Amino acid sequence: MFSSFKLSGIGLHSGAKTTVKVSPAEKGKGRYFVRVDLPDKPIIPASIDCIATTTLSTELSNGEAKIRTVEHLLASLFACGVEDAEIAIDGYEVPLLDGSAQIWVNHIDNKSENPFRDITETITEEIWVRKGDAFCAVLPSPEIKFSYGVDYPYPVLQNQWYSWYPEREHFVTAIAPARTFGFADQIKQLQTAGLIKGGTLENALVCDDKGWLNPPLRFENEAVRHKLLDLIGDLSLLGKIPRAHYLAYKASHQLHTELAKKIKLSQIRI
Image 1 (cartoon, helix red, strand yellow):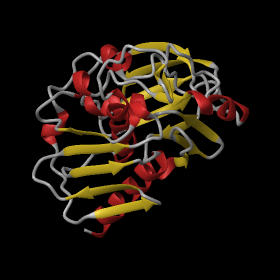
Image 2 (tube, rainbow, N blue to C red):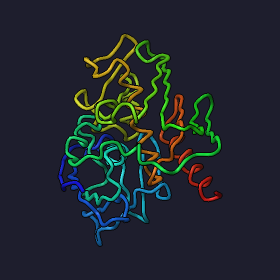
Image 3 (cartoon, rainbow, N blue to C red):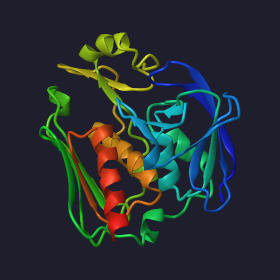
């Protein structure tokens, strides 16, 4: 059991300030959001069945109630062994904080030593989702592991791969500190589209064709580690992440969540 905590900050896309209170929930209730700013305080389960949109973040909905950019907080709760949590929020978007999961995990006390070691569900068949040359896959494996590759048209982000073994290296040190990132030449276009209104050089890494605009990096391969953070947050919408090898290349929240949906269907068939 962890202690309740409260954090406030600006949303990446909305630019609006919200406050989140994370509290232990009754055993078996799972992880869920409560929009305390709306009439009747609607509940939005952190479930793959509640996926709404996946444009540059993951958004969940339940009826008219929505909550956006849930992936960093959900990854933190899952990786710290928190299965049941009430996440009360007074707005539409979870705060970005410093762009990573580090502040979230720092506030989750009584962390499980390593919840990935307690996994009993397994994957028995390969599952793939693709879009162009991008893909997400899950492969049967005796050990849970995650491999991710990115390849962008910027020198600092070309052909970058990383494999993470949760049973060998803890999420808190290997994945949580990795910050979100973006590209200088896309900022104006995205803001015109109503996105990344809250993005700054303090909460996101930004690069151009010459390099990073706001070094130093926390890891040499911080960007691909952050993609793994996003993947874990999206897969956590399954409730439990089965033991397997998760493999992704140039993927997105859309592909992450499509893979999660296919995993759920495969488990139902079993």
